Length: 448
Ligand code: SDX
Image (tube, rainbow, N blue to C red; front, top):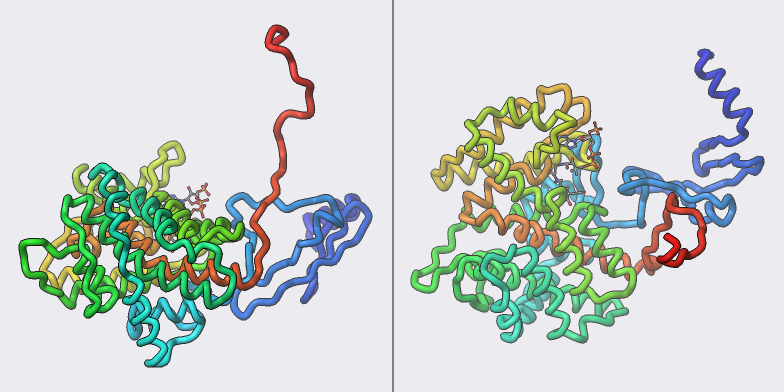
């Protein structure tokens, strides 16, 4: 045994504080006592130590900034293997889902746990069409926003405002009530996303056409010009459908955890989703797709020297980061990035578009993936690295990219919210390690 191991054993023996792992439990020896904590098994991936009795028994809590090692819940919905770069919706590989399914079917799969039969699909699709009318008064709320308002701020506000027009969707307790609220949300949210876009363009808003599919209807509501016949381009519709599928759910990411946290107080679905929209807006999360394009445009304007910017991203003194690179869980290629990268090539070729941003993105990816800084830290392109290139090719403005992410993520947010409620998860209330001032008495201002 090495000297280090002997020292470690000696140190541990002296301190009597150590953990022993066995197959189905963890034994913590602390302060002369021994405590056992069960290991919770998984179907796939991480198993968890159930520490629900830790504080009562030891007076200790755990500390895990950003919850990098902490499971917040038990879930059946999505699983991703960060080391292998694999993603599964209800057990189905994302590659198969992206190739063979459609966004409405993915909504059903995430929400109900199984792929729908033809009758189930038709009934679900018809309900969404039945509920997709948005109260005209909502237009008055949209009207008061300045045209320059960021679409994510508008979308979060409109989403919360929906509550006022759908009061029965607030206090839902049964599965049936939750499913109804889910269909209302799925139905109306795409209109809010389209309207948000129209607002930024100064275009009149419309209520869509129920003879179309969910994605076709969104595409037409968003892009139909009042003075021209609208042409439904199947290349665009297929690209949008695939992008929305790829964004549909992703375990307990920041915005999903926000939806769960807000919903854990038994807040209504619409308000919980509104909170998720706000969380997604951040440039470290869903806002990264907008930040990637802005970064690529900046590099192009700066002369296109990708090596210079890769060096900046590596420099600790420089707060520049390579947007669209890195991931909390994926320490391999994000499988969605692989699919989107190929789709970007296909769509640009189909639409006959040359996009310098794509060329720069490919150069960045090549340089970064050969650089030890990125390799050693396992930083790979994530879902946001290429998605903006497709959105731009489809004529969607940069500020709308995160709205598109939100539209895709909506079924995931709703499904996770529903699971949290049906599982009866307790209200979320983390603890802290307090390092502030010790207890002291108030001092009158004259004595300070
Ligand atoms: C999404 O969680 C999800 O599932 C999210 C998502 C989903 O579908 O919901 O996948 C969507 O949000 C994708 C991520 C989009 N964000 C970006 O592309 C922004 C750029 N990426 C980084 O900010 C970062 O990689 C995060 C936020 C994505 C992850 O951050 P972590 O897990 O907290 O990791 P970290 O910041 O602690 O970084 C670890 C190291 C650090 O260096 P050291 O301090 O160890 O020396 O890697 C470095 C970081 O400086 N690093 C980067 C980097 N990302 C991490 N260095 C340069 N460029 C980067 N992009």
